[in-house]
Length: 106
Image (cartoon, rainbow, N blue to C red; front, top):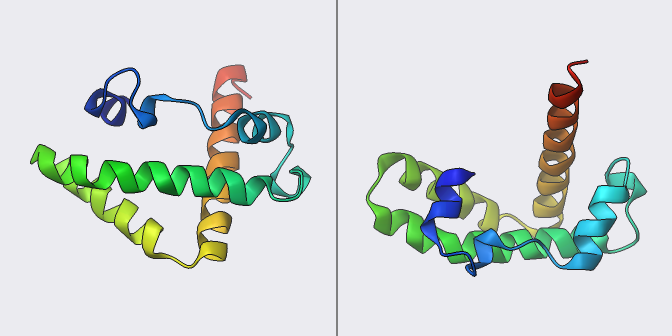
């Protein structure tokens, strides 16, 4: 996360929160089935757009690890829309759960 953040300045897309309606919905939802209608697609569209803008920067950095991440992002953006949404929702909610469990040391 920090490496991606370092690629752009503070106003670069990667350093901005997703659109408020989407980020608030994700924060409030227990899991992806608890999201308001369309919020999952909105979040996914925002993350895919961010990924598309980062792919070129990652390849240009010349770092092997960055190129590996760029290849994974390229796979993500080439997936059909419903697969993107499902993959991103699983990633978002499992990451959130991991951070919650780690924070509270359950």
